[in-house]
Image 1 (spheres, one colour):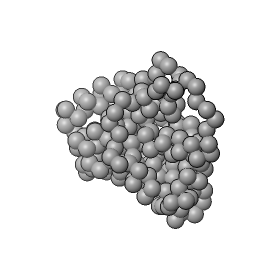
Image 2: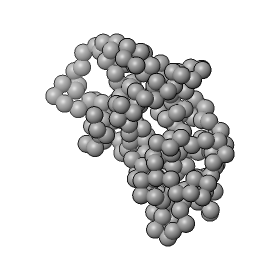
Image 3: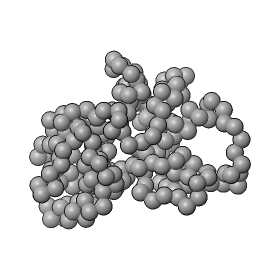
Image 4: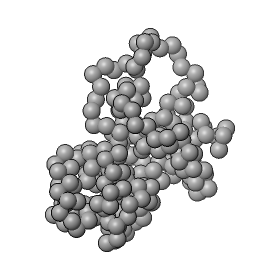
Length: 202
């Protein structure tokens, strides 16, 4: 299953607000489609599937990638759901988004892919790179890169910077001070349902 490239508001109407996917909000509050307004009671499976889809679309992952993250989270001691969210939040594309360098996660992924971002002075163009505490994430010292990020910084995707990050607007440099805490995750999601969803197949 390839990465979703269709209309984003269609997804937010179905799943609710996804700050990483789009900043726009849908005019209609009910799901799209002919029967959007008169949905019947959803099964347990449908509820779990919806939570899993929220995670997938917000962070812009394919099904295969998300399954890999779930398996990785299982191998770590602690709450699997919380570890899963931390792994996704510490991805480079998401960290760039949370620092305010890009308005959405897809925009942050493009910044990373095009080589506008450095980690500890070296250009890293892998969006799934796992950021570690102590690393410095900066804008590449090129005019094109700086102009692009300067424009994005005027309209950040999220208003508040999480406690595990710090950002210097003048230097255009951010630092990862630790691993994100659960209350700073902007997405409203029940991660336990995602773990339950995958418990049958992972």
